Image (cartoon, rainbow, N blue to C red; front, side, top):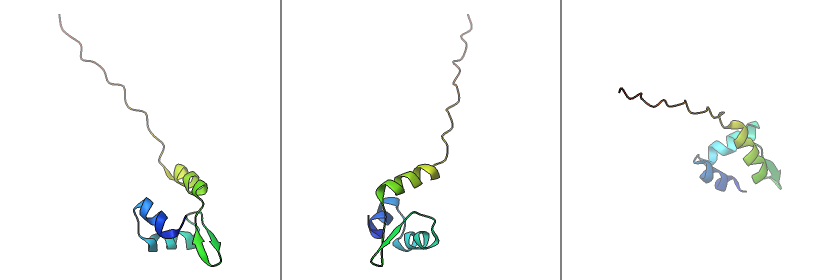
Length: 66
């Protein structure tokens, strides 16, 4: 996947993706000087970044007075 494509998917600027790739924050690889992204590695990276989902609290039904 190309840098601009990934930026569009993630909703950030191409410059932000470039900075993340250069710093090693996001998994990337260079092919003939161009930055590319492996979709599988990006999916794994996103899963690790996603906050743990908290279970929803139990909802109690109001008691009915007789």
